[in-house]
Image 1 (tube, one colour):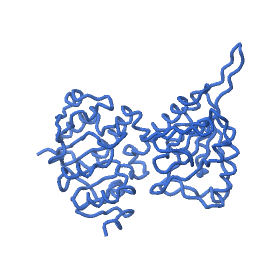
Image 2: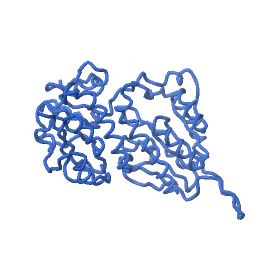
Image 3: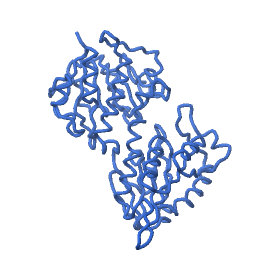
Length: 377
């Protein structure tokens, strides 16, 4: 009997993405799997039920019952959990740091949870790297969101009536989102600078035409984890970096913040005093707002006007580009399923595979991931 793959409609607020595209559905059908898509699941990503049907999926209202593999964008609700059978594989962006109780419930229900945001930063896992695919779009959209609220032009324009100066854009955090923000702002004609605690990002910033702003000392040379993420810096370093950043921010028209630390509240990079040093009409886009925010004055889901400085705190920025975000995320999932389904269409999960070790949260009724298995005790 073929594996049943279920793609339910997302139930979380502000979520417009879907976990399968017509292209990935075709691939699953070609792998001898049965694909069930909940009616209307793709509409907010511009995918109709008819497109899924044409790709070989079955459209239904109740898709979770008896499914062997459930593909979702966000973690399931408690209600959805009741419909998932014991032994099923659930692949989604689970957010285990914030969903400890749900993770425990999944373990008790015998569900095998694979958290896509925990895909290790190794070469063979790049095609499954959800954080990269979604952050890339978020960095692009952040610049467009800035242009929406910025009441001046980005590129320099020379006219008979005078010259329009180029906008000055400062990117804080040079991960995937930050690099795309730099590239997008440059394409729009802005003068771009960027900062990051990792000295290794200097060349990347400069290769995109940006200027690198950083306190470079011995501590900064060791500011990156083996997994490629930024480390928490000492208070002394933070003070030096804050002074340099404060001086830089006062000269900017637009600031885009992207700094996140896995499992921790986002670090405050832009203080109230820094906001007040910016000229009226300036814009701050805080991509870390849902994890506490990099800007002291940003608010989740709100546009804040502080003394004429606009602070943008949109929720779920990748979902604001749902069609592209869903397409890329679906491909990430397809690559994972290519790893766990064998050529005969059977589930074949190698628990010793480095990728599986990185993303597997629960198995056989227990929380197994080393970062979280204390939660099951």
